[in-house]
Length: 341
Image 1 (cartoon, rainbow, N blue to C red):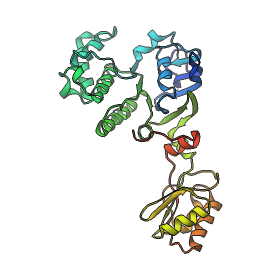
Image 2 (image 1 turned 180 degrees about the vertical axis):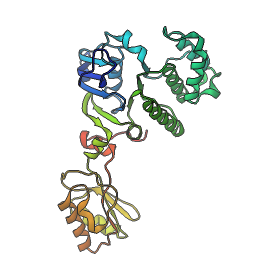
Image 3 (image 1 turned 30 degrees about the horizontal axis):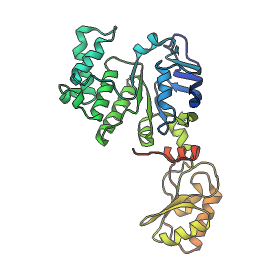
Image 4 (image 1 turned 135 degrees about the vertical axis):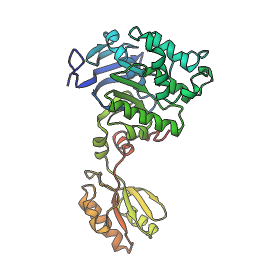
């Protein structure tokens, strides 16, 4: 639904219609229709080179679209840049830092450039932002000595100097170790709980699945799908899981029945079920006698289970795993993806 012209009661804080960007013959973003609900943590997902950063640069008024329209906080962009940007915190393509200044002094410089910032409380804002991203101990160190992850944290601190209605983060965990990634995910959840809409671009499926409420999937400049994360995962088929001490025989029977992509571990065999049945959202293993209840594929699963039992395989568990966001992405695009970094 379109947002109101005033922006304060907009249902969607970001909307685009047929948003397109060309660089010569290269079509970087192709007729993008995007809707980011107010209050969501919205994951903008796609492999590197899929058009995510180009889209963000158009949304922030940094580049003009070739055609199409974009609204942010209910206002047209880039025309309303001066109205919109004071309410938006952004970390795009890594922070721009003064290497000869300390982390603290970089934040003070950022804050002093904000015409709406009260100079009397500038230092308190900087200290609070440093604390929030875990940089208090390194605040006095020159930025040129910061690691990539520390620079990412400092850029995020700059985006948080003032309360924001919208936070736009382009690959915010780039360069962070696993602990740092967890801390940033926790911070994003806290910001969302406080009422900030977070638009988070990433090529990490695991990151999006853990923190986001909604997602849009891009590939080769085009939008494949968008909606709640749970709905997207629920629409994908889960993997068949058979728990048995007879893994070799089970794998042989399942292959004969058309199961593909078989993976055998000590007491489990997993694979892609045959056919195109609906569902795939069955949770975990179920007893062998209840196989028909998993994922809405009664006939297929019952036949598979019967084939296993008929071949003398001792079936201790049988069912479909809950589909992941990775499963949904592969089903939608036919492509692999960088799942964990």
